[in-house]
Image (cartoon, rainbow, N blue to C red; front, side, top):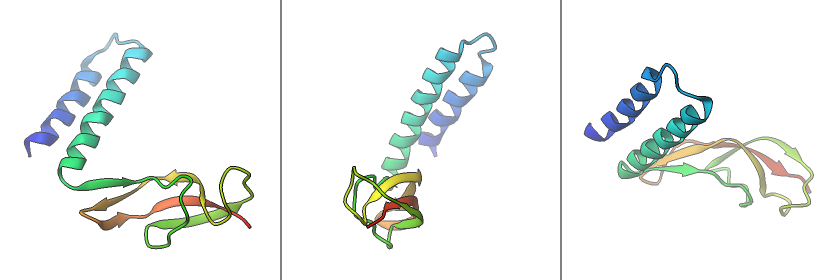
Length: 101
């Protein structure tokens, strides 16, 4: 669809800039990620990024546990990989580290 073309155009412009500095490449990557995020949102794709939230096995996959002074036991301490949902239906769970008791 047309919305995805903006993401591709942005990536191609970044790759075509042979003499670009690291800073400008990072800025371009951040801008492309923002365009992609907006496009995903338009199509009903939401990010599952549950840092600090209670662990929910419906949307999160616990890969380990660790003690934490920052969050309550049973809450997500670290998101190793964000998850995604489409119109409320899980596409991929967030891979998380959960605070131990």
